[in-house]
Image 1 (cartoon, rainbow, N blue to C red):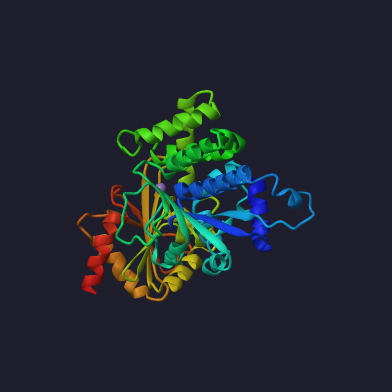
Image 2 (spheres, rainbow, N blue to C red):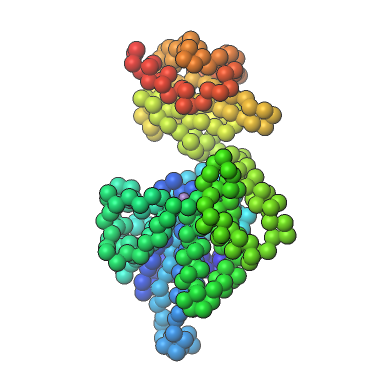
Length: 392
Ligand SMILES: [Mn+2]
């Protein structure tokens, strides 16, 4: 797989290709989106090489002519520097030995220019309604694979666009199905899956995560997801499929909240909302732990500047020894306003957050609290913030 990625990236860099197909997912860049685009692009490359006429490419292969081939490029739909924020994607890619620095990220190329410069096609995976900044993709789209309900309201694709749209738990189920179907056309039903075991494993892992291991309560898995899982397991042959599924789920869930690889600045971007002029990041660790990282308050202050906010409400939680929550209000530009907000949240009654103030060292302009109401999350803070803005 790294060989495919490496040669693709090298040819893209040196502009040596005759045609280009990019496979791109949605802007959340969750595991489903990232794996769908990587695996399907890898498949298109494999398929192209299976179908290539060995006779007509002979003189190219023996080196007597320069041969420019078609390229199949998965675009990881997040800026390169923000990729570590997608912790479960980074985790799975690391686990499969994919060298992440070799991948193509959203901001690596001027995509409109790249697509315009050559014979180009676009495959959309895991979405079919384009974000405003992605509208330029529409004219190049030749295929769509998606598991969301069909939305024709903004449909802007050519009439012969190949669509696989079906409501299932994971887009990876549809990607695997499509690969199966296309492979059987060349009578090589399972060859791709066997040639690229990392692809089969990643499809399997993603379906398990998206369906929460076919949890009855979550109810996202469908018979089609199950059929594909069984198909992949028939190839991967896990010793104990039940244990392997559970293990996979637990590893990915843990990776989702594992922020040990992130800097304070990255943590400020991982899961953040803006309410009025208050920046509200929510951490999968305690605020206390966040504040103990190098340059944490500097990162908060920079995030405020970048987002034009004047206060930050930091929300932390930790599940390692039972649930704990904590909270801090910070502002370096409007400290009096931050004091008002702290007071407002301390006195708030619907619901009460039960904030118990604590003194933290080196936390200037920062009011820190243990939050004793453990059931209140950002969802409960948002109406409180809206009310606070209303009375100011
Ligand atoms: Mn999805």
